[in-house]
Image (cartoon, helix red, strand yellow):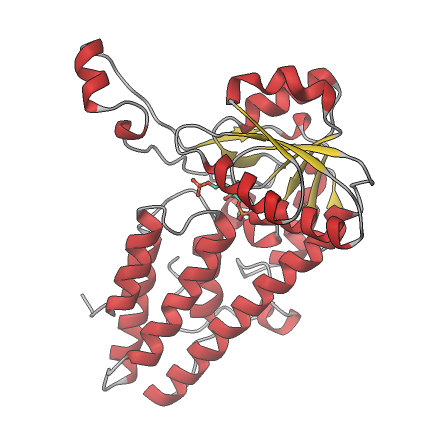
Length: 330
Ligand code: RUB
């Protein structure tokens, strides 16, 4: 197995430990790690350089299974690794990683503008977990001068809602933090539910933090519109061919302490990190290309992924290529 640079090890460890978390930040960190691998590599042959990059991508991929932005990011960079010398390979990797990270930023800004147009002055939103794509919509709406308020679910077991609450406070949005089980009670008081996504399947199903599907069912019952804010990097290419999205199962220690377990006695504890919301419970998916009814996301997927490629940001010329031999495993 080729050497993996310590920076890649550190980025992977941060993703695994959820120091870096959320689908877009994970993609950004992964591309950045490949950049570090390429920059610092002392490989002496092109083959050794490519082997190192592949090993780095595999190491990053093994961290968390659900956010498809991770393999999409790795694939984007690896497909653009080209050249006959180590230096040429290095430069093409650095350029690809740079291009990926700026595309990610741009897509989030564009998505924010689209999402902001759904929000009116005085609206109240409810959100779940911590999504930078959702926050981009709120930020753009605030820049348009709209006053907003928010109800934020704490999002057990890891309480990512606290991060969202803090970010919203930074945007001068008054926040009410609630426990997850109180969501239904507040749905009549909010104008929109806005959530992010870790992966979106070809049928418009949305994979996001556990609890999203229950929230969506309740929102539909109450007639509160529910919108998913997700860049196209969240579209899952493999689901076009019928594959399903793997749901991460996390450690029971996030749910129950050793002491609590000792007191309760022998019980099973499950801790799935994500769930799947069927498209019929969702009103729209907001992307950097505009908003779509969930059931029609497959059209966007076909258009973006095209034939013979599995990445959303390929230029038409790239879409026809089958990729370089750097390996497109992820
Ligand atoms: C994060 C989560 C977020 C999505 C979207 O889960 O479910 O809603 O990743 O985030 P975790 P973003 O905390 O387990 O990573 O919009 O920032 O990509």
